[in-house]
Length: 436
Image 1: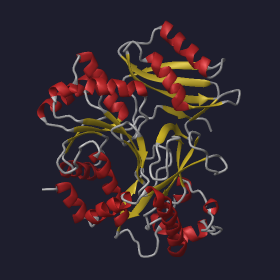
Image 2: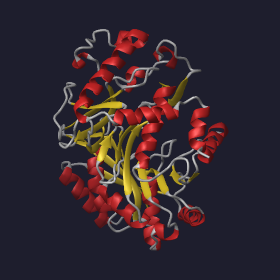
Image 3: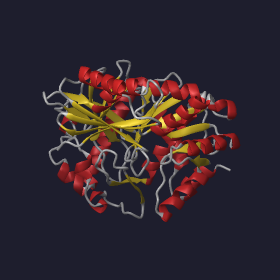
Image 4: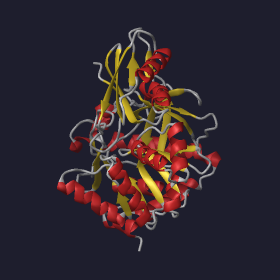
């Protein structure tokens, strides 16, 4: 029985209709695809200008013949009571409602109409199908957090049952816990791993120490799909080596859709069927392919509330190989609010110099994981988990490399932890700035 599909149908999400619609969109030829996108952009703007009181006021100066006149919106623009964001005819009783994790520091509750949410699942199932994963039959090893409160906990456990998945507790990464994970893989015929990058990296390091390749004890494994956290090249190499399967990178946002997903050729294909993705400069002008900028996304089907030219808060680059029908995400650099600001006035993406530090700090295998915090304009703190305290030589080398990448005169302190604090959802934020 297709339990997963049936559960969505039971909740009123027309999945079969959405699946057929997705096929129809994908069958639009390349020459006509630009016209399809332009029509959908125009339709969704006109719909909300006509039926959504919030958007009428927000975008009152919009000329729907000129896309540049459509205002860019942010999470802050949408942080109002949900009822004030609904379009005519939509209420809490006839839409899908969820909330973002707040990883960006700006959590909020959002809604999607049921058809839009069905399309979201149609796209997800389509992409997972690229790697021969079936949501109704393929067993998932799930590396996500879980709510502590009883109601939230049991709701997630029910979802796990319906979704044919076993959840691993990402809040406990002790060797004892990882040993129990290993036993679970010996018990179940998992077809794929799915979840947060940092947690699976810790499992892979454990397997490396044990000299075990996961697929040798769980031959049914096909693929590992990472999401919600940046996937560095070194981590991908480690995961592929220790899991013994390809590693696929997913990029999505709960309030929007699946944004980009790697195909079998490791091309990070952007979802152009239900989203329109732009890369904009600081003046909201589109940049050329190959240039970095802010990722701004329009949900082409959500009638419940507007996500039109929505600045998701990330910085990225579209490949020069991109086309209207097949945009390719070349690089996801990090969040716009994850910038290190230095005494000289220089700015540096936090994740970039996190990566520089990572190549040194994890070289000897002693450090299991770490995060970087900026508390003052010239002061950084590295919180790390390791079996032993970092040696003076290691600290000196890290300091030299950070100053080489950033600038001299920085104060860098080190603090060993028993474990790092993760968000309520289980994500690990690699760099945080606490500057005002």
